[in-house]
Image (cartoon, rainbow, N blue to C red; front, side, top):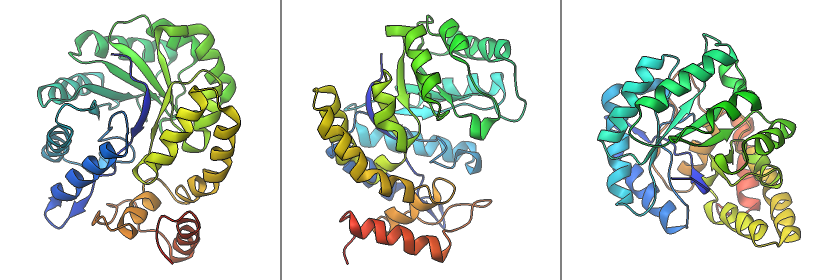
Length: 293
């Protein structure tokens, strides 16, 4: 399965009892009705480091039930342990996930050879397709285009969420890998630039908030209406910046609360949005008609 299009990186709504399952179900159903091409729970935006094993299972189960086979569910399963990642990926498949998002190992800083072996071992053991996740700002290791080109021939490795912020690197990945892998934007403010460098979609935190607008931007670009896509990008860009005014998903989760979703607060060590930044966010949300005056 070659994943392409718009995939919201889901927040994880919390309540006093743990996962706010009804809120998560409603969010997924609403996003599907907005035309997204799949959902991605348990990523960075889903605050995966703070979730227990049982909570991860609940999140995947709720998403699979809410989707009901209409679009893929791509569960975040990556850790900085190859063995643990294999176990989590198999568990996600058992629960009905369609694919797995697997981040580059963090903290232990593997070499490029280490990355190649890590992802190859996971892909060899995985019963479902993988999307690799390169985000050096969080992991302290960058997957090079050359390493990706070694991996992209594996039948289970179908896409990469590329969040290096480096358009030269994205271009080189597209040249070296061609049609063997789909490049998905991992930086929301660079969705359109990534598409111009050969990208096929995005895994987006902002898609929790503006799925229709981001989907329309992609449709405009892929249908050849590049000028309209540029205007859409420039129009939405200030909002995308505001949604990342503090560490993701702090502002995204606050926005969903302002939109009427009882998503709860972020878990420690993250902290709620500062009041000054909250006012900046609210101004952008009002200006884009997301919340009322």
